[in-house]
Image 1 (tube, rainbow over the protein chains, first blue to last red):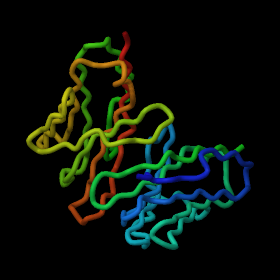
Image 2 (image 1 turned 180 degrees about the horizontal axis):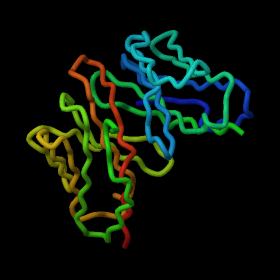
Image 3 (image 1 turned 120 degrees about the vertical axis):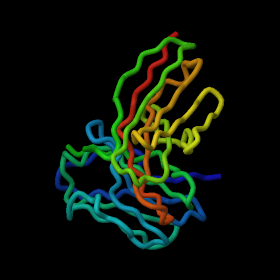
Length: 111
Length: 113
């Protein structure tokens, strides 16, 4: 039973570069969430989708961040251009009314 | 005021001890509450839901106090494997079918031999 799958696990990039994070939710789940976790701010909800439609993107920090969900089995979170303050662990999670199931996360370091 | 607040700890306890964490929330209309556990460099995982009447799962007991707007987690007979960060989670909205969960920053527990 595959869980939420995220890629890459680690990403190191230079300031100004574009970064794309990927997520495959659990099959049958109709909601998908992108979170960012830092020591200072904890887990912050960036955006969530229901049935592939963005419902609330109020947590997206600024226009440099964008997210898409072209179909029920795939979502991307893009940062362009990246900045050092974007360094964090980015989690994708999915659910179908029940508890959230998180992926392993992508640890992003922007130098 | 933060929507969900927790004491970051760490709580250092010996094996076998009983330890309790509290978490306060600001939205009195919040409907659902959870405790998640997060191990170092891992993803959060659901530990237990918190029901109005309180609930128990083995060594773990969760309580909800709506009047004072806090939830608690009690761990009895602590094990080394309980060492982790415990995240308090609140759904501040009415039940719309969407779980826009708000996470606390977590309480770190260290259980020593």
